[in-house]
Length: 60
Image (cartoon, rainbow, N blue to C red; front, top):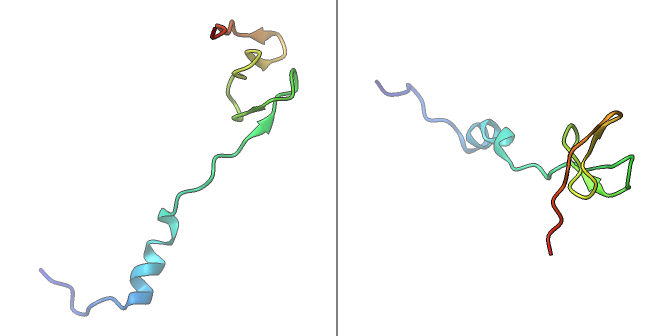
């Protein structure tokens, strides 16, 4: 089956409006102050939340 009428350029582009890439959002680590992703462990110090800290291997 084919559509009855062709979509206009505006309708096509409006339908694709939500497909654009979004920049990653970063927050400051409350422990060391470096930028990290929200709800994730800090890459510098391993801080997740109060009472939980992951061991981070240092790269030489």
